[in-house]
Image 1: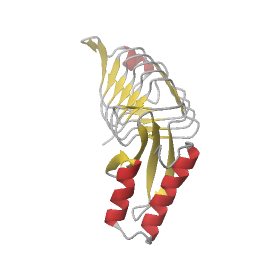
Image 2: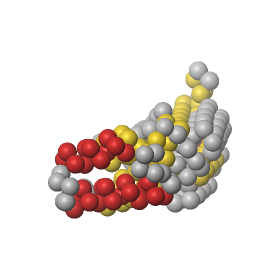
Image 3: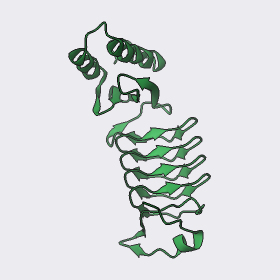
Image 4: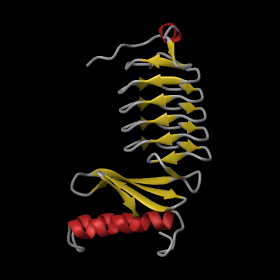
Length: 196
């Protein structure tokens, strides 16, 4: 499906409905200034140096270029991807499967996986090429503990360890990878065995 490329003028002319600018699925790489209270459809694409105001919401499958900045209270659906140098204001929330490029920074009160709050301004590490699917795994430093997103799995560090050992032998490459990644995450976040 080819997405319509919106110009700044076309974007400015989009209607407001129930207090939000209604933005259909499309390519917004030509738009550099987004006001407050925008609502975007799925699979939208945004270019570099975009700026978004408060209360924006984004559907599944959105992708963002480098140096995007977001105001307070933004919410993002599943499968969002963010390039390098993105910054997020306070109260942003992120759905499942969001991935973040290098140098992304997060404001206080950001939440991830829809409900969890980060313990610090460096809320996660990602390790690529893991397991049989060579996917990226995320290890989150949440206020309520260390959590893991690996494929369809999302849960605590203990739940993750149990799931890995349930699915494959402890001496298998996959188990050694995932359990080793878990130890890297604990070390990175300064967590003791008991704290995780």
